[in-house]
Length: 372
Ligand SMILES: [Zn+2]
Image 1 (cartoon, rainbow, N blue to C red):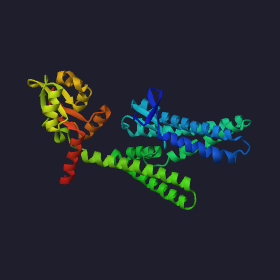
Image 2 (cartoon, rainbow, N blue to C red):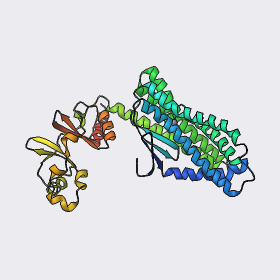
Image 3 (tube, protein in one colour):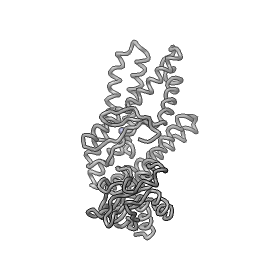
Image 4 (tube, rainbow, N blue to C red):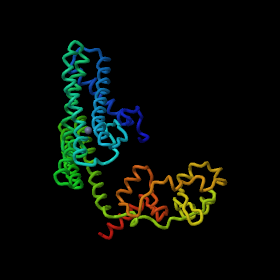
């Protein structure tokens, strides 16, 4: 989870977090409910009750969204796909599923699970509503939650990426064409179309006098469009990398330093003179480990004079590694998973090169320049 997120705890082992932007939508929604929605529905409440009911409703809406995301997560976990986190933010919630679904069927069921939970909540709140008839705020709360969960189902079933409907649509196109790439591009382009439609409709609303609502719709449209575009970019990027292997992009001029060199010497004589950020640590002919700027920075500066490279390096045995034949796209995904910027490329126990994100980008640039 990133630093803009407040951790709320874990459910099913999944860390749940609240993005700072959530507070904005919580405040806006509470204000909207307390100042216009509830006063129109119910005329004779004391002012404080409008605000209290508004705030409780806003919180219950986000509990509903959390349950929706847990719906996706439970099915993902059933397919043995890790769920890294669930974050509530200004546009609702997002479950970060740790890997692409392995099949069209799993994608379909993971995607549809969220709207099914929302539909179940809509039905549940409609069914319990009559029981609250004597208590106006509870009755109003149930009515609003039934309505909003149903609206969530309809909105999420729009067949464009990144919405759930877009994923369902992608799963169907994937199953029919057997081509994930084409399915992703189709769903993402439909997503962009709906994004534009929302922006257009939102701007039109602004000009016909609905300033707040119009801006909000346009803002959602912008979010849909930019997320869908990012997905298109990713597919194109993945396509450009496909067929290319680590051995083509790795740098082989990885400098080696002796295991007994002190950090001070390493910094003075190698890093500041060459600008390199990563070194192999060798004893004789064999490589013992890898030294990065990050590791050096973890040692207090006064200790640099008596700490050797061998003491702080990443030992070879603990290193995540790739082979020269690893596909570049696979290598990038591994870097994401491990949270590193470079990986040693190894055959057996020998380091033959280093592959960093920059290496991949500059390789891609060269490929595109050559039009190859
Ligand atoms: Zn969903």
